[in-house]
Image: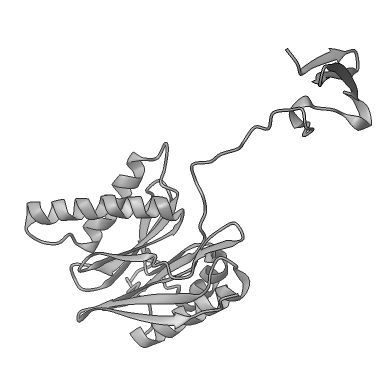
Length: 266
């Protein structure tokens, strides 16, 4: 059956049918014109499609925790490659009255993960007659991601909320469930642009240093809001996957309020 590849010494011969006529083409298999049949893209070879179960839809999410507040923010652009799929996609979800979750990466995986977690939050509330707390939710997310470590959700998550003492808490994750509690974090396509700014403005004394010093962000709520807006405006100047608008969810003892600031749309 044609077409076929034949090797003859240092040459590779390609035999194919052109109508009723059999034709041959010879290629140098070594030297300057090194030939690999698998890389030949002529009209006679079958093209092998490459497919991946994952995509990266870009976007940036971040959170900052204070003594009595926490702010979780994300841009609203969702992209694939060089195409913008939507300019109004919310990446932050309220998982319980004291817990927010923001995700960047593959938005289909993020939506599936949040749907699963919301179901488990409902189960927790039914079994315990109270909403799940921020710290317990953070552990549940870690367990959920770890169970899928061999085929992970391609989502990079931040959990933000108020702990049992009313203090702001931020938990940052990798794709397979490793996490830590910190006072600020950033995930997504703008992470490399924003994290140096946060380190410079918010980095506090190590908890291993004695006497112990509060690790909470040394900014007031309004100052933290201004810093987050500046970070997103800066990232939008260089990161094509961050833009259109930034949504800020501010949580304190009075509840949750939402603020929106427009970003560049080009």
